[in-house]
Length: 141
Image (cartoon, rainbow, N blue to C red; front, side):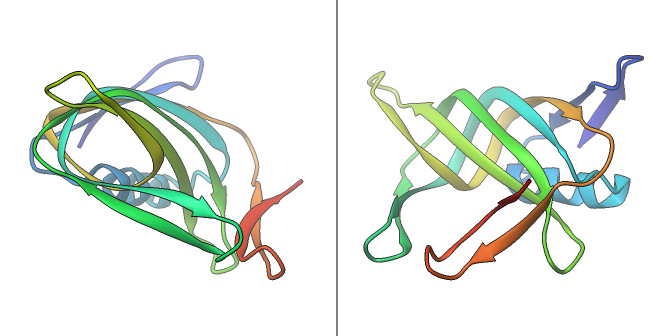
């Protein structure tokens, strides 16, 4: 992953071909000790896995998308979990060759050829904690 920082605090990141998007971003955040912020991205990827939260079952229904897809919109936020690690909460809208759109929680995507991320870190820390009755880690504000 390559990056460039700007005076306003924005960091532009370029995920290189073959790099996994979510884990690469998470590793960058942990290296920089960034525990609050937001991001937006575009690009293309393969090996994509999306999820839809089923509140009754308290789990994600997962779907893998075949082939290369356009990352039409990838947005999310950054927080910190109980173990002190950065946590990325990404949602994506992806388009396939037939120009159909798919969306949901992004679990995995490998850049092909790239994913370009605009990261806006915030000062301080936002915690994310498990809410047992929901089965989800939610922001603690």
